[in-house]
Image 1: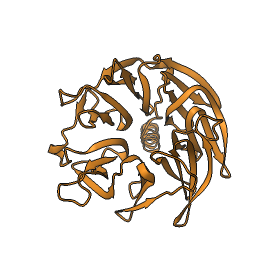
Image 2: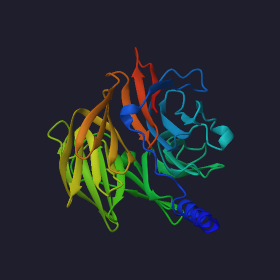
Image 3: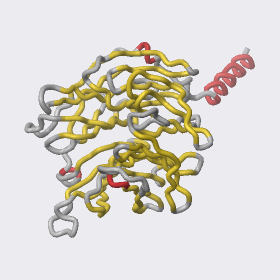
Length: 350
């Protein structure tokens, strides 16, 4: 009997040690219960909020950033409520304007934007591209002195290899703990500002998409030179998504925007998903399972080649961004009112 008991105990110990963590629990988005939060700001004079980017390290650590008429706020969710971060108390210039947030964990958060140049600077009174970083305990601000520049987007493979891009063809690469500046130039004549909307590394090659009225552009970096691969006139048959680039966990390169989602193979785009409106965000909440939002209020799930409508919030508010994990989903939305008045909302599914 003692031998049998000892054998059972050994088997139990082996079973626990060989499988110390149970299987990952994945919540089906169809089972979400939705709630909505209206984001509130420290500045009582703010009447317009059009936040455009959301990212989280977990369902208890989520950031939302973007435009506000009294200074672009940085909002943070701690699992219970949203608060407007006090910039000056965190060592960030009051003139800082946040545009996009991205990160690799709660102790590694990056936000791009711009800041007013210091009085007496050769760049004063213009804005300069600016990036801030949170290391888990404090924030650091990097002002990159390019006159009248704004960083609108940031993406990276890891915290040591990042790309940022934005207005006037500006591109910055963070490598070896330093930011280096670059620009993308175009040959074709056009008018207005030249925006680099997205930039990613894919299979060790850097790609970017941009827009300068009336054309959309697709670029590849060959060594130290940016090569324009293709372009199309805005409003005509799209060759790729005009909004943003997206690298899946399965190592596929997508782009999304007006009319759906495209996938790239051999430097050529093919459309894989058709939508009625413009896709404004994608989140891969587990590998090969996606939640997709469109600008006019529709939320979809996509897996195994099947696109299904998950939720329809209506055309107002407009859906601007999404972040989700295997447990919860956060969708950033902007409700347009009379005149320029607007408020930012977060639809929270859990």
